Length: 149
Ligand code: FES
View (cartoon, rainbow, N blue to C red):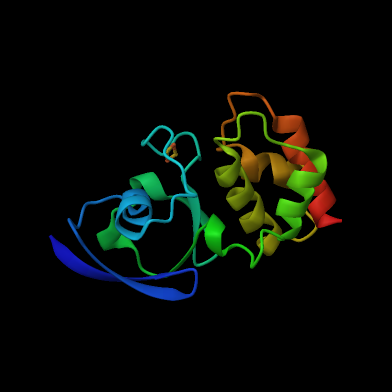
């Protein structure tokens, strides 16, 4: 066990955990930010996506000891759930079961921050690592295009 200080959603958190604990479990269990979801645990599905210095990363496979930079989770993406992507998600009613959608939004938000007017190909590339078992892909893409407009 060791002490770590993490910058998450512009707040500083001190945690005492094993160095190899994945960031996902630090967020969910040590800090109580439950918005980020566990899917595969192997960096394959994207459910656990958060931002590290603005880049979309898989928190299930990043040990807390390797976290260098500022983390943003879905809880810190906007003040009141009103990020343009969150508004578009609601407008289009994107989710079915909803489980993967936080990861989808975080990947899309990293894309729009980097490229405010993404092409179809940019969207497909950025979102290719986020799996949705319900097949909401067409609505996800539509919402990203709406948020970018
Ligand atoms: Fe991290 Fe699937 S839970 S990629």
